[in-house]
Image 1: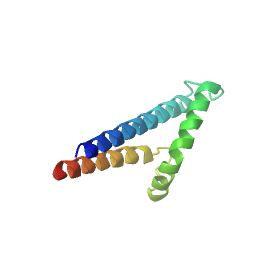
Image 2: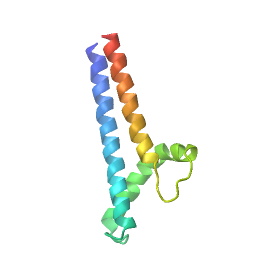
Image 3: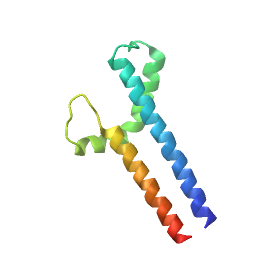
Image 4: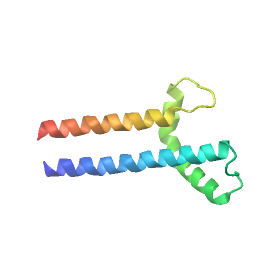
Length: 98
């Protein structure tokens, strides 16, 4: 049973890292959108593009299903809520098995 709790903790850690990447992508995108930081800043542009390459395969299917909302992209929010729901379900399954 301890192995299930360990696997849950590892999955929770990965979800938390994923959520942090989504937040960093969102903040850098806002900085670029409002011209706080110029897109010619190579350091931030590299970070932003790297995070986009990591998250795009996960966010693209969500974007395809969701209706267009103009400039506001709600797919990261949907992904964060979905990941949290999965964690809650996993935790309850493990607790029920214990």
